[in-house]
Amino acid sequence: MIIAPSVLSMDYSKVEESMKLLNESKAQWLHFDVMDGHFVPNITFGPDILRGLSKLTNNLLDVHLMISNPKKYANEFIENGANLITVHWECFDDAEDALNFILELKKKGVKTGITSKPSTDIMEYQALLEEVDLVLVMSVEPGFGGQLFMMESLDKIRTLKELRDTNNYNYLIEVDGGINQETAKLVLDAGADVLVAGSYIFKADIIERVDSLWNL
Image (cartoon, rainbow, N blue to C red; front, top):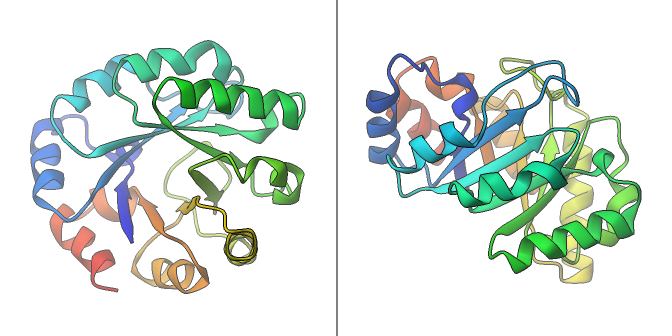
């Protein structure tokens, strides 16, 4: 199990203190929700913030691009420290278009992920599952932190686990949205490998909250 705190919920008046605590915790990844105000109704941060935080941690930098044009901007995030780039299926014309971009990313030496909005059927992008390193299940509507967990996302997790087991795929299953100690147990039992948690970790004692997930 991998814990990926989402810096979307970090108190940016206490960046160095928060990063120090994260580094002392059992969190292995750092999750960046990049939003453009177009694909989702919110604006967050760009590659400069990623570059700055990359200097404060050795954790894997997990970048989720919730933007309309990932082809245009992905390379900037790679150049500024991204180790894993996850893109939205809805941003591509078709499976061939998405696959070509994923293969381009892999040539740049980064891990790749695919995701979609909760209402999108994962079977639409089943053809990509053999090539990606990660599939992200959104358990809230993308755009804002602090939302309640959508229980129907558990079915997607179970389906992805079944597809992985049946076809010998190698992707990790990541879940983002409404994760706390209770919902984390549900998604782990359903087959998830990576937990993204924002408000749950950053709105309380960081180390204690990471430990509470780690010890499930």
